[in-house]
Length: 400
Image 1 (cartoon, rainbow, N blue to C red):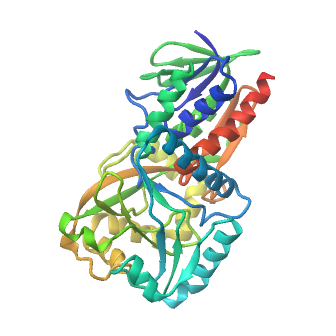
Image 2 (image 1 turned 90 degrees about the horizontal axis):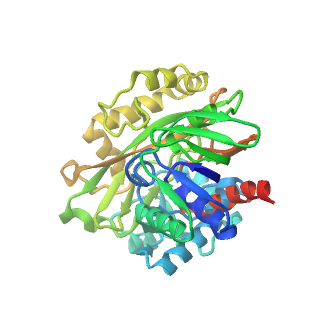
Image 3 (image 1 turned 60 degrees about the horizontal axis):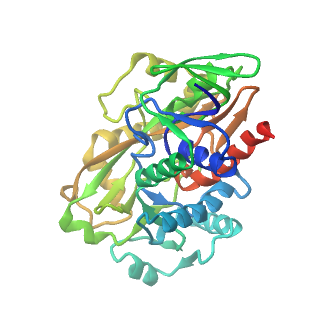
């Protein structure tokens, strides 16, 4: 079968991209290829379910613009499709005086990004929002919510199919051959021919980019596992909505936090440790080839040399429930180790460049035959419809 556009990756970004394309150009033949037997199995299906506001991101960056636009598009989509969600708001808590300048920088950034109602609150107000949280200062961010992103992604897929799009499961791309005006994708299912390929492969986006001829690729996807605990049912009262720390500005991670979940319960976490397998959800998951590729990447070696103390701390918390509890107690001192039960884990696809930079923005590249979404970690789920719009705009320029 020959298609106009083949999208590799049936996660929330790939499905949003397909939906955006077919909404604008319903006459095009568009297919989404997913290697698993179900959609949204990996990053989309294993995250904290937060609808992000755009507070953290550099004004004018792809993360900032797509998160803010995507927030509004996502909320509208959920309303139209009757997908349950809640706009809960969240607090960001500084737990010591050293974090106060960073908290002020966050407030300034949020206001620059156009967030309405975001403000610094008094400690008395903090107690009203989150009675058990403790800190020296805090922000309240009303434009934050919770949703089940797997339900959102599946709804994207259903709407995409209803408009004429096609989804093929169990189609893992193994090889890509380019010809003058088309691309041949050899998959574990059937061979797919398309005029344009869009790479939304998440944890394997760099691999697919390499296959499709993205020469001199200067980034490598490094998998970071984030592990969660859940509060016991009788201790869920300690968290009303969402409680976040002030993040370390050196890392593209937000730190361990508390999140009330759409499906019920309260999650605590995640940490951030390098996984030894790209889809390594367990501490024992290991793939020698993928592990070797990660540790021999010059960029990761530079990151490790610079931040080895932080890395050791993250691994210690991974293997020590007591240490994980201590980190959580900075936000809620009443938390006890016995309050926590094992939760799930997710793996985040974090792009790292050769110079040791963990990419802090979305990254989208183009070549003759393909468009590659190379870095789309958080807040990509919130931003999905906006990212899909950005990619579809690039794609449809080729079909004028």
